[in-house]
Amino acid sequence: QQKVQQSPESLTVSEGAMASLNCTFSDRSSDNFRWYRQHSGKGLEVLVSIFSDGEKEEGSFTAHLNRASLHVFLHIREPQPSDSALYLCAVSPSNMGYKLTFGTGTSLLVDP
Amino acid sequence: DAGVTQTPRHEVAEKGQTIILKCEPVSGHNDLFWYRQTKIQGLELLSYFRSKSLMEDGGAFKDRFKAEMLNSSFSTLKIQPTEPKDSAVYLCASSLDGRDTEVFFGKGTRLTVV
Image 1: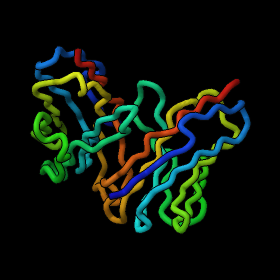
Image 2: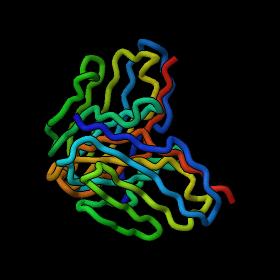
Image 3: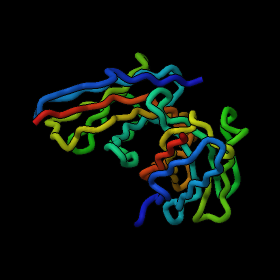
Image 4: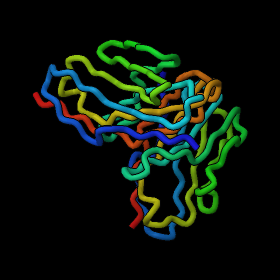
């Protein structure tokens, strides 16, 4: 059974400083990796989806996937206070995008 | 596009009550999901519908949780009877076909059982 863990549990960075979030998964055959953001009291907003090893950039968000090491990272370039939120990593098998297994999230606080 | 709409946004129930949560998926989407979100467990899949047919019904949630999809644009999640441990945020989500397309989430219903 797929296990997804995120670290750190919480992270505080200064406005403009790079934020790096880590997600580890247990099933190397996984093919779909997504990062979501959830502001307090809101739904999940997809930030970036990545399906092959390497990097994928969407605006100020870059996902980096390394399946051999079972890691997928999210880097946030020049974060703003409005980026303060819960960040969730989700993993699913190929052709079964609906079978999302989520981590418990990293709570990011961006200090102005 | 209205996105995924969930009602109510907040619900307070007494232990033993029956509550019904509602969801309208994105128009045209064929797949609909119900998740429960808690700080300790994170997001857990409760139910998954494809073209109104129930495809998965989370094993741990079967006894008191029942999701239905009466038509392609409306789904309900009934919890009967409620228990304090059911206090959580319930999220509804939809996607076009559930394979590799994006999954869109509603804002959730925060349920408190006292």
